[in-house]
Amino acid sequence: MKRFDKIKTIQLFVMIVLAAAAVLLIVRDTELYHLMAVNPHVKMLGALLWILLAGSFLFLFYDFNSYADLRRENMELDHAVYSDALTGMANRYSVDVYIGQFLNKPLPADLGCITLDLVSLSEINRRHGHSGGDTAIQAFSDILLAAANGVCFVGRNGGNKFVAIFRDCTQARLQQFLEKVQAQTDQYNQMHPDAALVYTQGTASAEEETVESVTELVALSDRRALQEG
Image 1 (cartoon, rainbow, N blue to C red):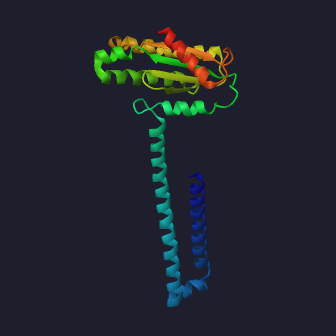
Image 2: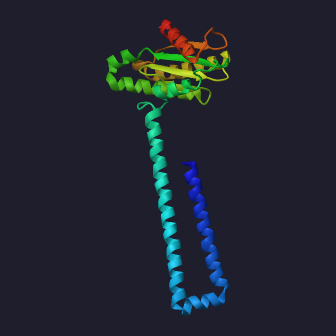
Image 3: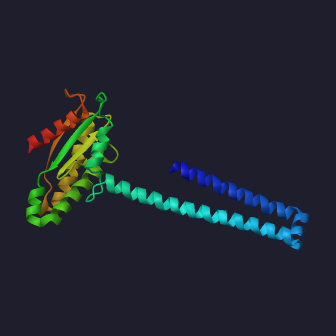
C-alpha cells in the first residue's frame, strides 16, 4: 500500500512538472505559440498532447480514489478481525497475536500480566437481561482502556475475561494500573448500584515467577484470578 501510494505520488508530481514545462515553453517561445495558432497540424498535435495529459491526470485521480477506498476497506477489515465487536477493544484473536510475538523465544524478564474476570456479569444478565450485560462489558472495557492509556496492552480474552500485558513491567506499574481500575470501577458503581461491576484479578510477573513461557505467565495470572473468586 505505501509503495503504491509513493509511486502514484511520484507520477502525479512528474505530470505536474511536465505540464508546467509545456505551458512555460509555449508562452516563452513566440514562434511555437504562433505556429500553434495558425498551423492546423501543430494545433492538432498540441490538442492531442493536452488531451493525453488531461487523461493521464484523470486516471491518476481515479487511482488515488481507488487507493483511498481500498485503504478504508482494509482498515474496516482489520477492525473487524482484530477488534471486539461489542467493545471495540482488542479481541481474543488480537490477544493471541500479541502473545504470539513472545512464543518460541526466551521469556522477557520485564513482562507482566494481569487477568481480570468480570464475575458480576451473570448476575447483571439475570437482572437486566442481555442488553444490561452488554452495557456492563462495555463499561468495564472503557475503564480498562482508560487505565491502560498506552501503559500496557489490554484485550478482551473472551466472555467476561480480560487481560492486560505489560512491557517494562514493575510492581509499581501493575499496582498503579489496578488502582486506576478500582477507582474508576468504584465511581461507576456509585452511579449504577443495581448493576455494579465486580471483578477478580490475578497478576503474574516474569521477574518474580518460575515460568518459562508467555503462555505459562498468562495462565498463572488466570488461575490466580479464578482463585480470588
